[in-house]
Length: 194
Image (cartoon, helix red, strand yellow):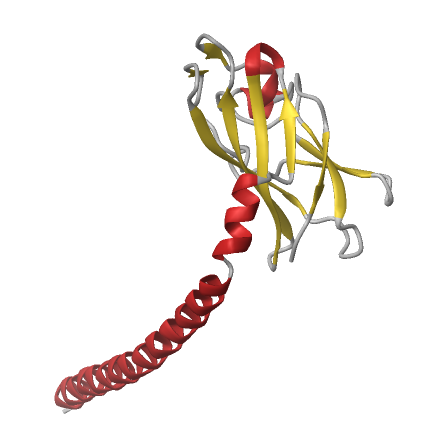
């Protein structure tokens, strides 16, 4: 008798599990659709916001926040420095070869920390300096020690450019003006937005 009860109980549990799974699946689908409905609104409002911003973005493209000059005709044009909700600042820009011939990107741009250097060429040597708060912020790293910046480049041909980014811990909210420093380049003051 206990075998029948156990089998019966087992079937009941399987039926209950399937029913609960279906209920959760259906609820998840409904929630997912609701979530999807919300995402287009966000995208839509972002698109609407972007619809009014192209002239500002075009202005930024014409006039970078800063232009840092390096050796052999290399130029880093900083196009944005955005404070993100996650507590970091993302600096975007273009690394350009303004010289007459192909240039090997200096290894010094990676910095001199062993953990970053062993992950290949990067902009891991970049820092943000908050003069007001008297602090220096280094490029963030992931859990494997890789710098959160553009990596894997070695040479740039004459006239070519490469889109780059660097992520740093965010300085305090009142520190909107910082100095970007990159080894072998002149430093430049940039404004953090957001």
